Image 1 (cartoon, one colour):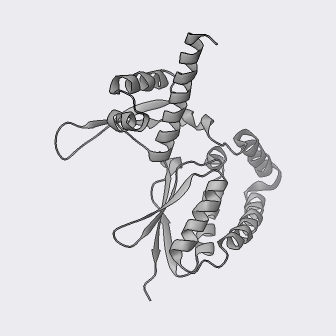
Image 2 (cartoon, helix red, strand yellow):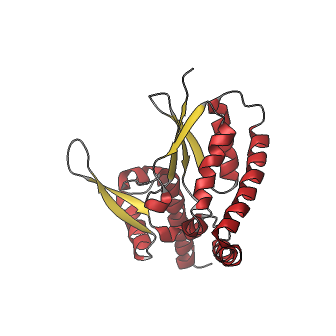
Image 3 (tube, rainbow, N blue to C red):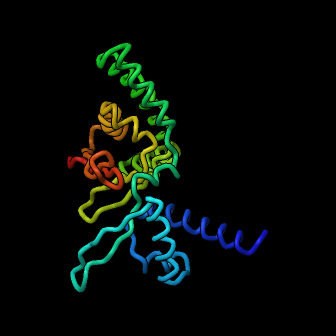
Length: 219
């Protein structure tokens, strides 16, 4: 293998690693990225500019309490092709065909069946989890296995966040809002009646991830 080929392979590997990290952590500046890859700021900027030319990343400015705004690098929707898609083209085609064959009412019935099956699967996975945190951790685990890159974060006010950094059915959900509506109902069901859950940031409305806030009802 030639030296140029080795250099090209290293660059490709580094850029894919940058894509993965931005998907995992969201917006990052050059300094943060440099520390993760032990590269100079100039080297990271070269990789980012190459990715930007491919339409895979862009940058936004974030205000800081002191000093000038910081430039954060984020993924564009085009970068979703590097992550599980859940057979999006086929899913969208099937949804449109079901609407045509059965109408919206028939599609809703099919979604109800899907939701029931997922509910049984999730409840089995949650098993004997005894509290909301344990249930949410297990829910994040099964969602990650399905391609949602999910994690749980505790908040200072005692609430918990279920964060999904990727949606493998995003294209399908865009043409069938019932998928997301049923998903929220599914979470409420498997977590139990003693919790309140609401969706804040939402991929389909321009967010970089889907974020659900979970609070346990006070006795």
